[in-house]
Image (cartoon, rainbow, N blue to C red; front, side, top):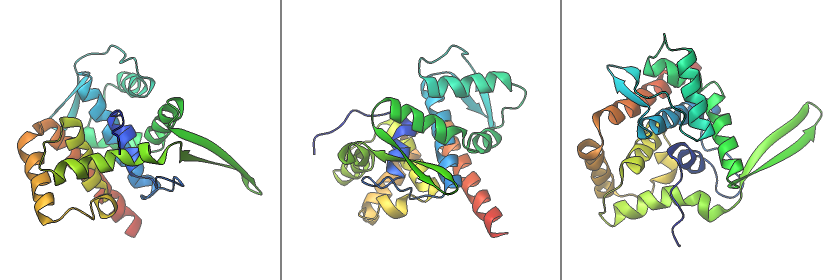
Length: 216
C-alpha cells in the first residue's frame, strides 16, 4: 500500500481507534476521550506551546498554532491558567471536548464522513472513514516499521504509547511478536523525550482510574 501523509497525532489515534470501514469505535467513549485529550496536549508540545514539568502543563508560547483544534485547547488553557495539572486537563478534555475537536478536524480534511440517522429519540450522528486505506495507515505504519526493525519518529512513538495506554494494542498490535514488542518498548524508553513519556504515563493512569470508577 502506498503511504499516506502523516496526520496530527490525535487524528492518527482517532483513526486507529475505529474500524476502518464502518467507523465503529474499538474503545469506550471515555477511554477514547482520554487518549485524544493526551494526544492534543502532545500536539501542543510538538508546536512548542507547552512543556510538562512535575506533572503540570507549563505554557511557553501563547500564540495560536494555526490549527483550530490545538488552538481551541490552548485558548481554554489560557482561560483556566490557574489550574494546569496534566491529569486534570486530560480528564477535562476527555469529557467530549477532545473527541469533538478531532472529529471536526478530520471532517474538515475530508477524512471522515458525517452521517445522521433519525430515530424516535432524536437524530444520531456518526462518522465513517472516507477512505479505509487512509484510516488504516497509522497502525499499519507502526507495525511495518517495527517489523522491519526501523526507527519510529517521535510522533509515532507517542502514538504507540497511547495505543498501549488505552488498550488499543489488543486490536492493532496482535501481529507483533514478542521481539517486535520489545523493540517498540526499547525505542519508547530510549528515544522518547521524558516529558512525552510522562504524558503517556498520565494518560495510562487516567484510563486506569476511569476503568476502576466504572467497576466501583
